[in-house]
Image 1 (cartoon, helix red, strand yellow):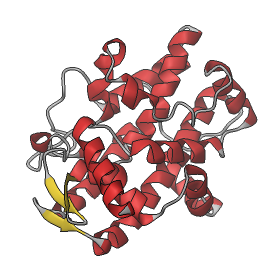
Image 2: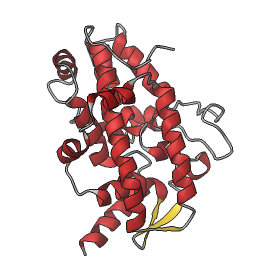
Image 3: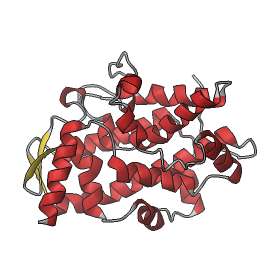
Length: 269
């Protein structure tokens, strides 16, 4: 009965949202990042967010994008790439995509914008660093990032995007976001540095796109997803959440703490 209720809620959520990771995934990315912020960065982000943490705002944009005030951000959560395209030559959405959106919001954070503008940019950067590590945010344009790619999740009809937003994550581990951080955020320093070294939105997107291609190959239309699928892909979910958190922390530290030595290659456009 519990599994049926979970699957029903998963399928229902997938029908109304095209956005990424779900609450748990976004909270996990932000919480991992929060554990790696310098004191100066934490003070700066807390100030911009009126004392609230980056975790508090991690999933805010998924809801806000459905409102008239922030509807302009709807396409900023993803970069859809059809199977016959490459990451580089995929047609650009005129309204923007996640790679360009990250650059634009970071430019605001680094510039002379007002506190209000920087607060909004910070909320968006926190969210987008989660989204760009969710593989189906590099999904096919032809099926709306997997939203129209039918699958059966433990016998119930769903779609590939929804399964990757929540289904694989929640079925892999029934943890809170703090438990996710405690269990997966354990890399030796050298391995953590490799994750952030030389990174920028293009390299993150290309890396996620490569994973997305593997997922499509392993999940044909009407595929029946069960325990074997969850077991295969849960380590990928763990890795992507950890990467998102570490890269978010490194990016924010590089913006807000001039004494921090960043390893990313994030320069303006």
